[in-house]
Image 1: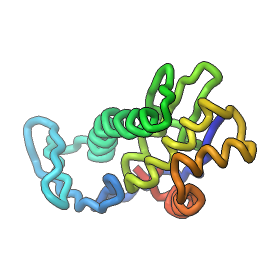
Image 2: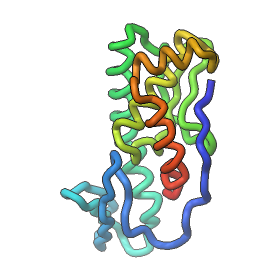
Image 3: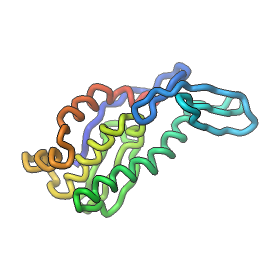
Image 4: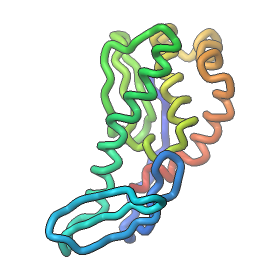
Length: 168
């Protein structure tokens, strides 16, 4: 089953901020011989040679953080549920936040790393509930609510902010 998202085309204008775990980080770009991205307080510092693709460097940094953090949040909730996915991977989907197959493979969109942790947990809970009910029946939504009591509010918040997560 898939959790839908709405995508926007990335902006062609320069980035001056990036969202990470729900917080806005000021983007600071510095000239350097080699590319590196580091978080420094409320800033994300990008060190790059002249002409480097800053968008790509930031995307790669976010993707790397997503790989570890989303897996950790998913497994944390899975442990509470008493069910483990058979496999976890990141997704680059343009229209969904997550998916769960009949075989128990769960994929979460790497762009979720920009959302607040509460929304990441909601998507994880939604996909983990599919390990028990592979549909969107009332029983499924009851299970989601057991895992994430304010799921409907979080779902609404994700829908409100969703398109902004596709800008990078």
